[in-house]
Length: 262
Length: 329
Image (cartoon, rainbow over the protein chains, first blue to last red):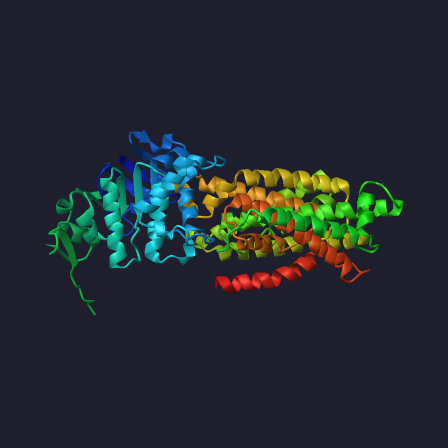
């Protein structure tokens, strides 16, 4: 379980807090979505989870332990993060790349053992990329690469998985398959925290949505509770209607047109 | 991608030994291989013994250590900076080290440890200046690794200018020596120098091999490294400092030798190596072979005139750099 308590993130020299007193919980077995406009503090929260941001007050804890009390290695055993961007400098074989997910367990010298090979195999199969194992990372499509990155995070065997916009630039099929994967990972017992702009998909898959605005939680709860037209209009500054998607009846956001006033 | 085969290791070692034996045998006075082995054991013609033991062998060992240091340094810098064009010479590390060494020299420090430490100080200072310049533009500039290369080239140019100024006030006969040194040369090899370089290469190279998995993770980028439990900033700095120490030690021993650190890691990767522990080792072996071969060429191609070693490596390295640059853009 990932728990944020009144978390404040502030960058050196910044005029205001990037994250300004955010509290929420991402529980095991659930897919929690973190949404909000650009600059609302989503990525800063991910940085705070990794202890890569100044947090003057508040706390981030994993299963009750403050992340600041953990070493970097301990932290990586408890929380696996798929950052927003990543490009390997030199192509590497997919299975070697996924095996780097064992680094928190192996450290600088320990040779990989049975458990490590098993973790890599499981991660490859869970993410559906077993058949890509011997390919090079520069020979993957965008969708394959994202799944391989998720496999790398799964190889860490951490109880919490955090993903920062994993479906950017993916087409519908690849995007859907990533959401299905995250949903099933959550149901298998992981605490999955997903940063995403895709409100409509999030509304269909997530158990809970935390909607941020200007570094604060504007609203949080089930998709039905969060997806209210008036609130979304105020947060995004754009006229919208909220309807129900015809397939499964989940709340769906339709942004309206607002022609330029010339 | 080519698969690396374990049989490549003995092959790499055998090639290095073969080139080294040829390099000891060939020169102004060429010796038959049998005479070389005799001389190594102190037998046979006393002149041959003196040539082999006091002139050629230290020179060959020095060249091998210089190459090993530069190759390993380049492999680490390319991985940690995620840049296939990174190498100590182009990043200004070697230039900074040269400034440190020349300063120490002109202030009267002539012992190996003093020169090595001064070169190390200069090299580390240069790498941090280049990093600071490339980061001054904020995160966007930091992502653009070309900025770092440009910063390195500029720092290197500044270092050259500083050396020129220092040399302008030096005595005429030191200038020729210093100039020769700036072009890179293994000619002044002595066993004391060899031992100092060997100690530096063993310490810094050993530390890098010890921490190699950290470089594997750093090569995935800072955010991913952090998510895998590596303190990206400190691990990166540690890698730069150790790589700078390696490069600086080679500069203190043999002057400025460019492009070895650039070319060698690419050869090692071309053999299918990716993980940095074997990559650093292989880059060390290949670098050693390359510099011993280049030094052999420097001594023999235009004999009796001796060509500067740094010029030979640059002649080989610059076309390679251009091909790489083209591939990147």
